Length: 339
Image (cartoon, rainbow, N blue to C red; front, side):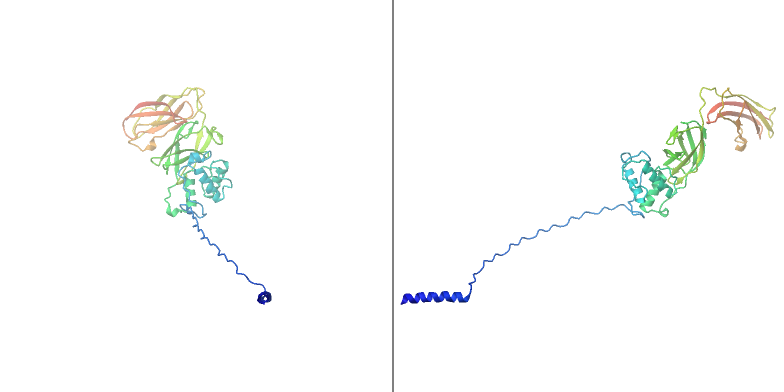
């Protein structure tokens, strides 16, 4: 009986479980694992600042040397690349930066010079360097000391063959000057007194061989471009005897206050065709104005001069014959007694 009760009870339990529906079993929960994030501070690079900028926003460029066609970064300390970048910023150089000063760079320099009212030579001289600094650094004439433009008064001599040394006199010459021959940069010369420069007449320039005839010379520095002056190249006389003064003859007795006529006889070798000039020094320069010292151009075998001695006395007159290059051909001295 007890056995039958146990079995009956088990059946009731099973039936109750089935009536209650499925049994829910507890789930196993795993907590997520968190790792602390790694934060890297952003890396900042310091911006590059130029020393200044002009109206175009380009880097301030102040070139410390002159240079031109044929220059390179190695010979200019990187100045050619800086120049090309400046020209590119200004719209005058549509080319890759090469660091070599070639025809494209020269053309760009010429365009910039023309825009700045500078002689468009294509050479970067003192005036062009100053203009580059003015444009790129934003400086104006009000903040700069502007030197007066140079002025050429004369060339001595003004006629001669190639390879002659020429003295240039004038004003406004600076410690750094560019001398141009037929528009091409010839040399850089400094002037210690501001009034004198010298150069050698070239035999060849970029345009070709320097021939006989007239050629132009001018100077350019930080003050501007000078006037142009003419130099005449002549063929040197080779293997021809030099002319000389043969004799000097005053006309009659010499009296103070009375004009006298002098004849200077020359010995001119056959075949000598260069021009000559005769310059007298009458010996009374300390007594009369310099206007009394008049020279004459010699065309033949004799030259006639006139002179008036203002005071009695004994004077030493000197007569010097020059060739067209200013070289002394002959010189004679004569004691003159004036009553």
